[in-house]
Amino acid sequence: MFGLLIISGLFILYTLMIKGIIKLNILSLFFITLLAFSINYIIETDNFKVNYTQMDCPEQIVDIWSNYSNHEIMSDFQLSRTLSPYHDDSSILEEPNYVVTDNLNIYSISGRKIVVTRVLDLDIVHEIKYDTVGFKPITLYITNDKLIVIGEVPVNKTRVYIYQLADFSLFKYFETEATYITSRLIKDELFLFSSRILVTRKEAKTRPSYIINGENRVVPYESIYYVNETYPNNFVNLIKTSINIYEDIEVMSYLGLGQVIYFLQDHIYIAEEVYSKDTGNSNKTILIKINNINLKLNGLQVIKGYVLDQYSLNEHNGYLRVATSSNEEDASKSSNHLFVLNEEMKVVGKLENFSAGNSIQAAVFIDDKAYIETFNILDPFYVIDLKDVRSPKIVSELKFEGYNTNFIPYDKNHILAFGVVLDNDKQAVGIKVSLYDVEDPQKVKIIAKDTILYKEYNSAYTDVLYDSKSLLLDKNHNVLGFPIVYWINEHGNSSSYYKQFYLIYEISPKNGLKRMGNISHYELGKFNNVDDDIRRGFVLKNRIMTISEKKIMENTLKELKLISEKSL
Image 1 (cartoon, rainbow, N blue to C red):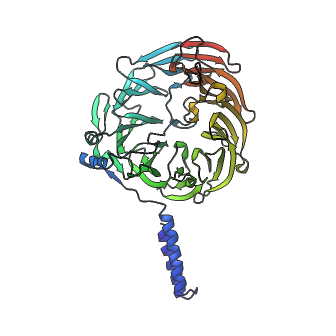
Image 2 (cartoon, one colour; image 1 turned 30 degrees about the horizontal axis):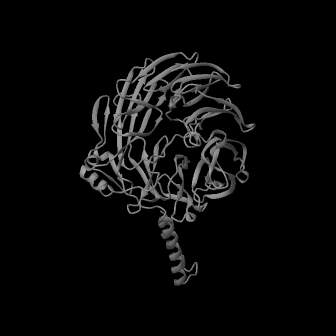
Image 3 (cartoon, helix red, strand yellow; image 1 turned 180 degrees about the horizontal axis):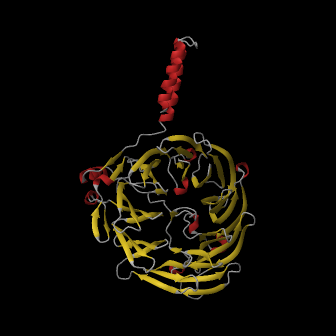
């Protein structure tokens, strides 16, 4: 496109010169032409050509697989980095969780069963048990009339049960011979990704298969893709099914890893790192765009660097914004980049090589701004203006102690951040939770912060550093909650066992963060294990409900006094 504009412009310039309207000698015209095409080359080479192949026979798949069958990935990022971001209740994309609620009942996983507990009085109104079918539930969805249960079946299979909520009768089920990666419910359609490793030639020759309501099927060859340079020792399967139509199901597969998956209403973006067959290292990413209606590849592009997680991708006004990091053998030459792509997956704008020597630890996009933090003792916090999609620019660079790993938009002017406290030797010494005021891009400031230092707990951890499944953020009641795991040392310096509590704060931009206390399902003097860990918290009936696999506890909203509890 840009090349055509250059040719047209040069033609007009040449015509005007011939007619004598402007005066240029041949040498000047030559240099103008050379400069114009040089600019065009620079722009066009940002849009690398990426090809894909639709399979038509098993030998074709085996040939691609065999070229990589002895290929090892050196990066520790080969597994899916598609964790759960914070769920905005206004979004039409529903995300699964260990515990869900429709405000009338709480639906939770307890071992190999689903327990339905009434919110009003904590009575158990129903149980779905899977003791005899070898099925282990791992995550749930709830809608107005359906309960969706996703789980694992030996060996390395994913099964989905969809129940009628009125009587908990089974409406439909399907199963795929692959390991669950992630899923989203978009309106009344479930999109589910799964993965199957190809170790032997026989496995590579076997097409992905699935079962729908007891009927065995295989994925047709025309729905199996290979995007050149993706890692082909693995099948990634995408299943789409209506939760309201019994027979409805569509499946597509591609050879890759399914590392970072970003869902939208009309399409899905997947970021796949490209690994060198010689070194096993990676410093570029293929972006894949899939149409949600027909599950066809709708666009491809290669960009520099790797994508940390789905927070590093964001679509706004038809433009995809992507933040990446490049690692070099000489760490001081590592850097970070931001690319803007249009609907045709062409790079139209970019900001390259900022924060040299560091890598992205957290990123979030809010409207026409990107907020990116990279790693150092005093962490560089960047505000990037994206109003002009063709020319992203850094408008401020600030330094804050420690580093963040999870940015959560609180509102348009505030960001909730979870991160790590560092000492002067860059060693982690605690966890921090912060509330940033970003209303003025030139004067970003921390308006509230609290720390959970390791020395107070013999080390500590929270999964909201990377995954927001267990996070409670209720802005209507100004309540923030998340779990803290800490270790107990009884014999010398080695950790003997751990315990967990759910830390509760009062939160608001006006009053900041105020620690209210904590709730724990662990009992003094009794053996406790992971089943006692609080998986999620809610504010229901103006009370705080916390749920583990063993019990539900109900506490007052302000004083956190125990009201009642129910064993599951």
